[in-house]
Length: 220
Length: 231
Image 1 (cartoon, each protein chain N blue to C red):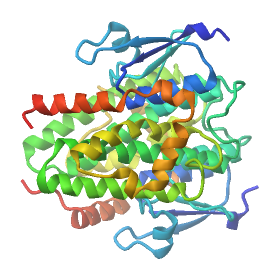
Image 2: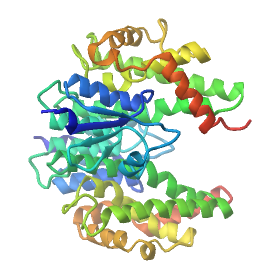
Image 3: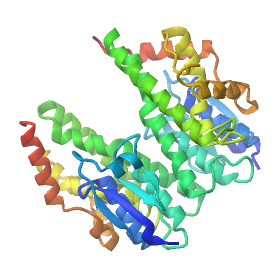
Image 4: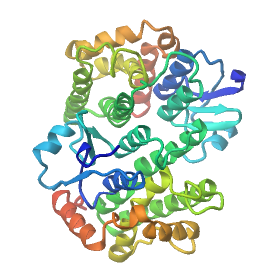
């Protein structure tokens, strides 16, 4: 298969883009990375994702695939001959992997954002809600090395980019995520031993600077 | 293969998410035990089976732990019964396209209806209605692309998106009757209108799609338990 015909429209800071970068790296797929500007979206992005106009978009042989979790499954199915498999082979475990990747989508992004876009009582409520969500993941990890079983996979890929946000959340929300969720902290360390992860994630401090800038602009 | 006691489905008649799973069980000729839940008073079984979301549907398959979330249940059923009426296509790009539109329907389109119910005031409701209309026109375009001149999203026979969207046609009729909202109509979404007629009469769908009274009871329950926001 002509791996050179793979283009990723992305944004360096995006957690969703990071998921795709990790998946491509895990499978050893070579691709062309194209950085998009949110306030000046390329004609290609608008053409390839007319419904949402968002990154990431994977373009393979000229055809677009959108939505990060959908792209990761596409990568696993298309490059199924390349190891490692990103989803388990057992149908029930596959369903579990999909469930937890979907859980991250539903609960993490908005929950975390609320913490740095609110103040006072609203922020306290957001902090509590977010910690409850992390505790669910903590519970799911239990004694397992990864979210669904013994191997790094789809659910881990869905969640690991958000660890970049922990530094920001700890600072702005006056939290200590690692102390409250030691299993999650250990899991983050374990995932960060993978080159695919460390090469794909943006710098946590740079993200913090970006959020501070954003808050300044909004006069917070 | 599908012995009656092997598969149990926790659900509620009025829920389109539950109906989807029932369509797939019907299409694959899988016998199952259906357990009706009262969402205003959730059973211990439901709360234990879906502690994360406490919602229906939940699939109980033999001695495996419970499985919630309709789209995840559908893919699971498709994988354990792959030879009878496959739901998703086999080509990775087609699968991605199908999943994309399911995500659009569940994350962008369906939530508009609950938002409509909860939004106070005529002006606010008009804004949401406009978004619903725009969404329905996007779905019309999607139907034209997927069906490629044939009867269903899945082509000659029903597939994933027919199940994912088809579960809602009882509700579109309900909204037309009770709140004067024509989601699907002859002028704006003619192909979808023809498609809904096929779904209404399809063997695997017709006895499962809830009628007006079931939906009215459910709607009234929502109005009481999750009342609209104050103006």
